Image (spheres, rainbow, N blue to C red):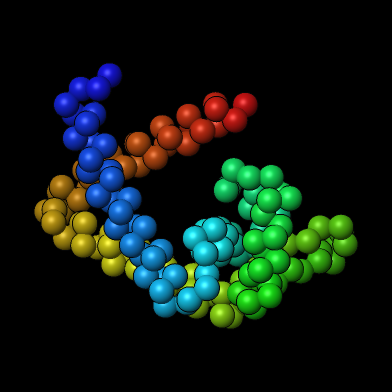
Length: 150
């Protein structure tokens, strides 16, 4: 299983992961006092628009009771707010505030710049192939995740 290709792929993935971690670190430096876990939750809420605590917990692979204090801190920092459903008052969703939306947008723009620089190294045909391969890998990982959670 530890073929030379696997080892090389692992090293290359590590380069990409380090670039993404650097984006998070730059956001943390820009917005001092925001932890990686808080940035992760901002990203989850930003992608979803509105999300319940159980869904946040599932995405960070923690219990709701472990996520609640982090969301509480984000509320205190005015980066997210909780909203009760009008249809069912028991349901509370988490949404980004304007300040939280700015942080999320900075993250998205940083990821887009990184993706653009990755694609810039490839010809148009290579870009199509590269994206096609990534789609295939992402679909395979999602299937594996579903199987692992059932």
